[in-house]
View 1 (cartoon, rainbow, N blue to C red):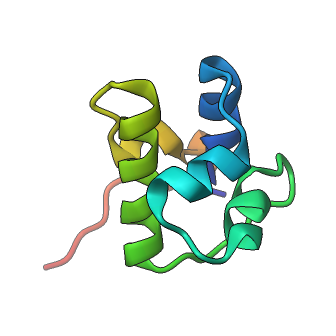
View 2: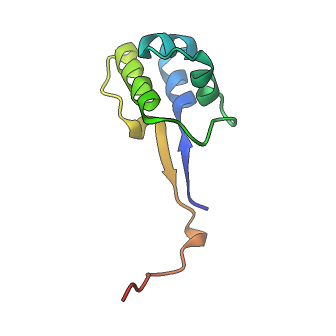
View 3: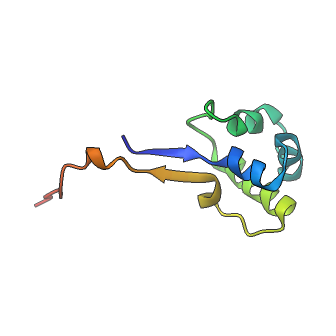
Length: 89
């Protein structure tokens, strides 16, 4: 099954950033949200877009890099599900 998966825990590890520091830098009031997203294997399946934007903003501030959404989310395709081209005509 194809899925979108979080990479936030990897990014935080790579840069030595804590979930707490990210929540503070991103101006996220609900610290539990960042902790849940950063907890490998227990990430939420839904998040609102303003929170996602704050996470990216916080990561940019803390790393000094142009972090993109694609740095913290990844699309994983399962080729066994592919059934061939779809004919829409």
